[in-house]
Amino acid sequence: QSVLTQPPSVSGAPGQRVTISCTGSSSNIGAGYDVHWYQQLPGTAPKLLIYGNSNRPSGVPDRFSGSKSGTSASLAITGLQAEDEADYYCQSYDSSLSAWHVVFGGGTKLTVL
Amino acid sequence: EVQLVQSGAEVKKPGESLKISCKGSGYSFTSYWIGWVRQMPGKGLEWMGIIYPGDSDTRYSPSFQGQVTISADKSISTAYLQWSSLKASDTAMYYCARQVSYGDYPPSFDPWGQGTLVTVSS
Image (cartoon, rainbow over all chains, first blue to last red):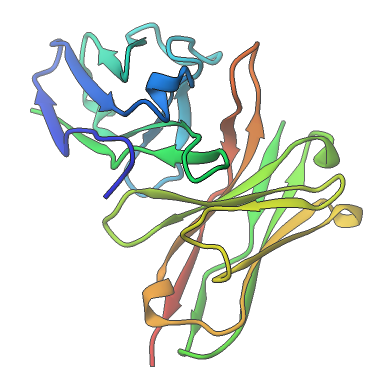
């Protein structure tokens, strides 16, 4: 069971908008730790998609956006394209167990219908 | 270009030892933490631990403490993940990734190695 909770799957038609949630708690996202998002295309390594809740690295299309509020974060993808079909993971930090450590969400599989 | 290149796929028997590698290039290897992440078949990402090659300071996830050893040889810009006695449940893809801070935000993992598939079977 992952510390950060994501929906197992979401889907949308080409051109539509989808959102993926990432829910944490008072020891991670709620404690003020920022959230990063990764995209894992089939058969490939993960790639950084969003850092610091809402910032895109160079080369990431502006169709991808992120936000954070309270103990949750969200990734939004607008103008869905077939190439967006992938697994998406959120990542943050957790300060329980008397030391910080990296935590990931369980991942969300995006299907483009 | 910043790049992490991992060693090739391994097939091992239960009880055997193994050390896989991750070679960095295109940046100052000793100035960034390197993390290891496990992905079991059909499952999500699990953080195993990180190492700072500059002084070999190492942190482990509680879930992996005592199960694996993370090390680095800064003279050849290479980080390692090793097991002393593999189990079938260690079968997974293992990724290394550089931890980097963009702006004032806590570190993210960028880039990632291509992954090393470890299969443990009798």
